[in-house]
Image 1 (tube, rainbow, N blue to C red):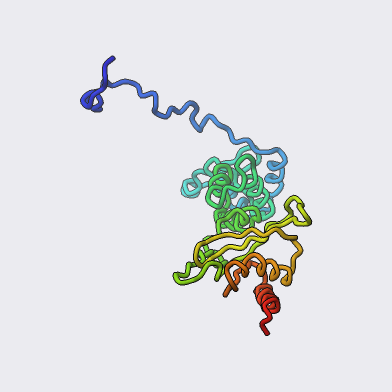
Image 2: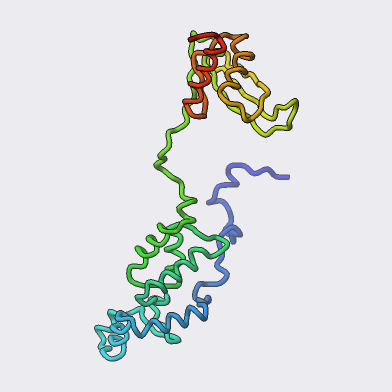
Length: 259
């Protein structure tokens, strides 16, 4: 077996031969014929006679077809009762018809809702009308599905921030509470009150409870499982209403005989 070296890999020393990795055009674009839906073709034909832009173009091509005018209208031709501009079907000035074409292409599977510029590119492959780019972008901006999938680069919510530690705090001096609910029922308990120490050692206490506990019940659980081991907490962090934490502190005060 011969191992390749640096010299054998130099492009100027390699014999010229066909490169199998190069892209090969199997069928040129000119061999493909744009196929248009029969119903859509009928709608286009029906809309053409009332289109002023079309009438001016036809008159210039046929009735006033002097060489300068014909030269300025290069790229236009008629075929099967339709008007083409640079091999793209001209769509009359009919907002409903234009919207139908854009909607059909924009929502086509398997790659529906491709975004503004991809939709513009796909529609422009087969159709043309004045101001179509602005029309298509406006349509996509109003597409509910696209807006739901669109990434919000200007979030209106406050970013999540980690809860900072406290150097001189005692264990469970600052705590957070949360409930894990709807667990298998054991001894009349179907939930767990999770108490996390956010001050010193980041410890966690799991307290069995019922998911319908109120401020009084919560205070009793904190009294039995936190206060008796670590003392009274200075701060409670909860994702519930701030008034709930205030009520818990109030009930703790009652248990401790604080007035």
